[in-house]
Image 1 (cartoon, rainbow, N blue to C red):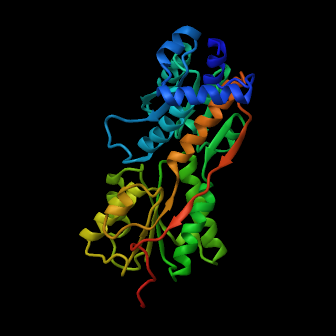
Image 2 (cartoon, rainbow, N blue to C red; image 1 turned 60 degrees about the vertical axis):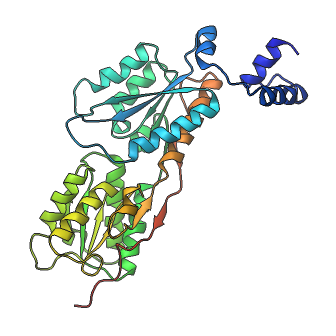
Image 3 (tube, one colour; image 1 turned 135 degrees about the vertical axis):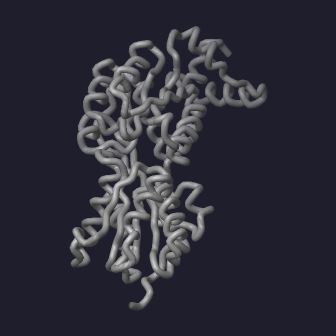
Length: 334
């Protein structure tokens, strides 16, 4: 069998008969052959590298799982597609972060880009990337980004509604809520779903006690301490926009001597590993972060294979699910 035929099979070319394809597969399995990505890149002049951008502020604590979950899912999908993955961290608070991200493309160091929030919520950055002909899939981007390129994520508004409905069904009517960073579209969607559920139940959302955090354990502690500082008419249910803040809230409530879930039910979002090891284990929304990253890579690889510089705008919704654990229960009788 000719070398060119083997090459076409290994590169996924459709111009090969199924019989030839099967013979190559058997030979690959027998020889335990592995593609040398560096050699392939040198020979073709194409890097076959995708880049995952991570939001990171070296002066503050990281999110405990979100970005590592994205990286794991993207790595798995890249390995299956014969691509390498580069992960580059940038501080979204820095004025030059857009220039730095665009510099990855200008330097010829990526064939496609994965852009999670909060960068995915920046239309100017999205436009700058697309203007350079770099295929882009955003993760969790809002309506403005979905109008420009492909986006993969969960329906945050629906998930926020489902979490609120769970607590309403348990009998809760006094709520607290710890929001995510201002301008974070996914976090705002979760809060909007919560507000909509309260209105549908005939409750005034303005009566909920609301604080804002930045997705970190520390701000969960601070926000919960502020929300529950006064002993009168405390919320009987507290929703947090992610699990790290919910874990911080649990610690703050424990320090105040508040029984969970006897006096206050607490719920988070993401279903990160920390949600299972805190006490009590946390009711949360399972966001399949690894699956989201995997689907984003698959979309990028398909577009690159077809020679497309832009992906069709739209939103691929990956299902979420509610995970019920011991941190939520019905409110104690007055």
